[in-house]
Amino acid sequence: MNLYRDTGVVLRVQKLGEADRIVTLLTRRHGKIRAVAKGVRRTRSRWGARLEPFNHVDVQCYTGRTLDVITQAQTVDAFGAGVIGDYPRYTAGCAILETADRLVSEEGEPALRVYLLLVGAVRALAGRERDPSLVLDAFLLRAMTHAGWAPAITECARCAEPGPHRAFSVAGGGAVCPRCRPPGSVTPSPETFALLDALLHGDWEVADAAGSATRRDTSGLVAAHLQWHLERQLRSLPLVERRAAPSPALPSSAPPGPEPDTARPEPVPADGRG
Image (tube, rainbow, N blue to C red):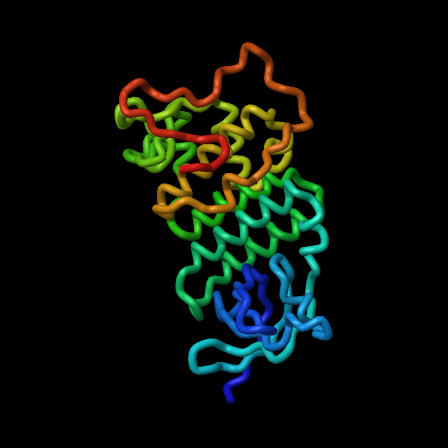
């Protein structure tokens, strides 16, 4: 019997038989694993509650023929308690878990950077110090960087001409200069570009000061960019609740949000539908 031990975040669970569950985790050393937790759905199970989505756990498993089997589980961080009771945080957390599950497609392949990003994002949600939509967008941008899909923000995505640029094309890879701008590009406000850059690089002073309209436009661009590259819609993104920012709204003289060209507009929905 080949035993191994690792720490990981529970991404999702599925029922198996009458009392078992299949638990999908993203772990530090083994990447994504799917393992059977036997008997955890019984009311007398001593450790079934530890293997719930969002929780950070230390598990011992042995390698099975088709699925590994979890033999022990200890809680490292009970993040679920700080996330599940708050709907905006719960929906943002579900989108984070689903994105991590999609980005790490191969089981058993190490994905340390995504694991560290995931732990940091879920910890931030559970800590309730950051706006959940900002935490979500920061995670999505940084996770796309790991996957090689990060949108260009401060330079042209096609010719690398230094910005700032006024246009953004999801299909084109991000910010585009006037010479490379394809039909269907949108024109976000300078504040939206600033927020994208702040979230990507962890400048929370700038991110927290962003107005609600800027946050909404930024979320739409991030969601559209992610789903373009995933080539499918994330089921949890349309459910994410976007609360108004506590900071004052931008003055009426500020540039408007993204406005598509009239030719072949490229949709940038605020709710993440793509």
